[in-house]
Length: 312
Image (tube, rainbow, N blue to C red; front, side, top):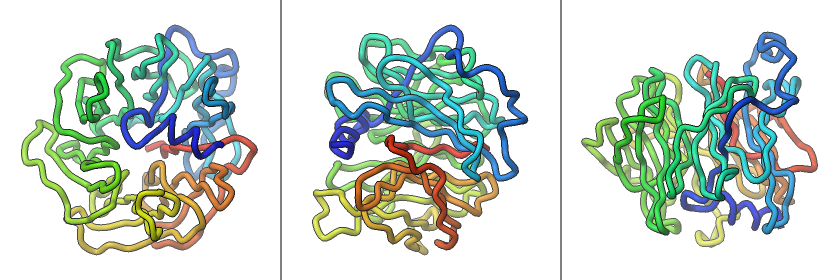
């Protein structure tokens, strides 16, 4: 039930994301100073699905230290809040929500959950925000009237919107000049790159790959690929890395179930966090060294945890 609900919620298209906000943060978001919450290894924001009824899905944004301590709930609204991403200075988190009218919109909040502010406000769906490393732009996914999802960019204040390409799962290069993203059909995804101005779009020769993420130094791209015998079931996704030209592919995970949604790099590029469904389809946040060693589990409760984002 959990796995099916998440496919319905997050989906292969833009229905894969969640969150919005307004006014002040939730009552449990105040109190501890930011310094007391951040461990030496950094902090990860993630989405926790707390209700698995498809007619009444509930999810919120949480954050946790990479040693598993300091867990804190950042949002508290009816419906779906999730898919967080950090600003480059770590002071803000952008997220997606369906709290107003049922369609996806993009919001930002302070790292402690306060001052939640709505950035997009259209009849269509906007989701999957990603701050550019220079902090000037936000890439996001736009979907209107059942059309295929597309990659857009806007200024960090929500103005200056521009469409770049068809696809989803955008991730910026460290120099803020390129965006890597998932293109193609849901049953045959590819990884493509495009300049931040929409020019020089190209697709890598890597079939069945999705959810790409640039490493902090720009020398690698982490991504997800299904290694199961039936590519239409999406029940054995694993995490890989490759060079930005598609060469030097290396598999990092070998765990029953899906490891996905999505890979996210530690600031020093030595670790990658991801969502692991496991054999029981119970979502938890795990992390692994960039060479495939040192697998650790960060969350392993009764709820479904997904969509980790490592604080820069």
